[in-house]
Length: 271
Image (cartoon, rainbow, N blue to C red; front, side):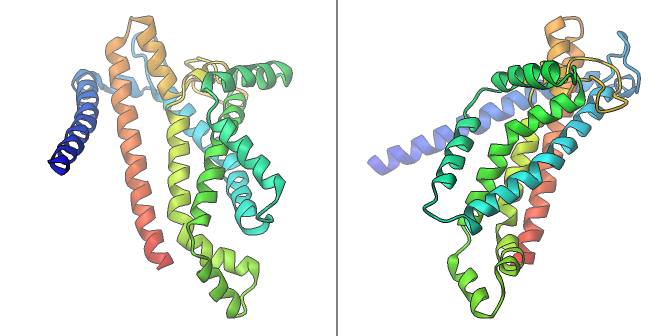
């Protein structure tokens, strides 16, 4: 009787989870698909077409710029914590505590810090570089922890076997450990991309809300999520906001598909 009850609860909560997801996605698709028009993809924003192309360009620059800085720092920090730092080092404990603490801070706090430090103190103003640097601080703990967990999941016997065959530390890390841990590291990177793409509060105070296509890293702009928020909050272009939501969903699906394909290939390569 107890087993049947637990099994029924599992099926019920599974149905509620997937049902809620399908309801949200279906609601956005039904309300947004009819309003996806060619004018939404004009390179010049006007009050008539409310084009999202400048937002798409800003989002792409924001994601690539953030990963260009955060990815090397986060991955190499994870490698240091697992492969090189002493296991009982206080420094490692402090880094992990700091990483976990930063992971739990609300994004609005990062936005206020970015505004005070990057926008005001350093004089970057509302710009892509301010948004990129703020996004780096936000996703860095996620990349570090995901890399660390991925490396810890690799069996020590593989390392010992590599050392026994005469391979050095660096060769073992890059030839043995990294291919096995790469899919999990990639999952952390994909989560970081999703965090950047879906962020609004932090970017509002650093990237700005300009509707112009950015011409440099010092240009202001708006991400897709921020563009959708601004359209819906103004109340004048709610239908176009739904259309922007559809584009966001498609973007997330494409990212997930690419990550799944890369993970499968990396797993086969590691095997």
